[in-house]
Amino acid sequence: MKVALVHKRFAPVGGTEGYVFDLARRLAGDGHEVHAVCASAAEPPHPRIRIRRVPVVPLGRTLGMLSYARGSDRLLGEERFDLVHGFGKTFRHDVYRLGGGCHASYLELAHAAGQPPLLRALARLSPHQRATLAVERTTFTAGNYLRLVTNSRLVRDDLRRRYDVSPERVRVLYSGVDLERFHPRLRETEGKETRAALGVGAEDLLLVFVGTGFVRKGLAPLLRALPLLGSRGTRATLAMVGRDGRAGAYRRHAARLGIEDSVRFLGPRPDTERVLAAGDLFVLPTLYDPFANATLEAMACGLPAVTTDRNGAAEIIEPGRNGAVVPAPPEPSALADAIESLVRDGGLVERGREARATAERFPREAHYREVLALYEEVLSEKRCTPSSPPRRSGA
Image (cartoon, rainbow, N blue to C red):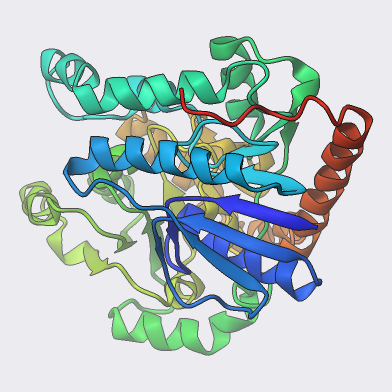
């Protein structure tokens, strides 16, 4: 196949970026001709990957977004590809993956979270957000795609509700995980080393949080849950991996709660698996996540997971068996109850085994095979109707 992968940034680092980069590598390795349609690019991981740069207007994020959307649309219209697979804020594709869910839902549930209601409403009305929603409406207009791919039923149902998408046009493909990189065997090596470096004893409870953007990921209620646990006789240490511009404010919040000695701010790290291997329980009380990959990575390391019903990854959690799910927005008391219920009676070891068994159902290789099967389905449909591929011109 001659495949175009359309995303503004082609790079190995980042959620969607890493997904596209890995998909390009796998496709090229299987002999396909891959064109990365992007505005910026890292060195391609395979010689069969061709970088197709789209010039963008370097005057703010809104003009940058719109100029890339129009520029990529123009490039795709000038050259024939067997299949066009889109991932970002662009117009028309054969296959489009909503890795970040519907932007409209993100604005309602998580954007400017923590701000007063009036400021949140004003933030949603900014020119950039209105332009982003306009692009999204174009993307999901009937005739501008053949298949839409979501990474959870949460996003599938939201997509159908908001944009009246036909059920047969949507496919749920859960994310895959690197089962070798994230593996319970690390607990006896890197995990013990990391635990010692964090000053956490073998008998202590270590909670792990992984996420960038602490408001959306629910760090504040998790911090407030720690003293509740302590008052009930469960002393826990929290290790946090991730980036946030207001990390200092969270440090001060921890100090006001009297738990500064129980919190480790580790910042962004390339070796997340080491911290997960050191932990006992993964906690991500997110306000909104289409499918937080960190949840699956933690479970692959043998950690039961606590998250909210607004995380698409909650769909693979069997409460009480491999984790727990609490309502969003999360209450500190609900988080403390969920953590206690999983720790009670020394059940973490068995629940950790169940978490690993769950993760083993989602290897990256299986996800890639699902993507290839979807490609074949779409190509078959295009061969049957060669005169009416998705139109590719600016909105």
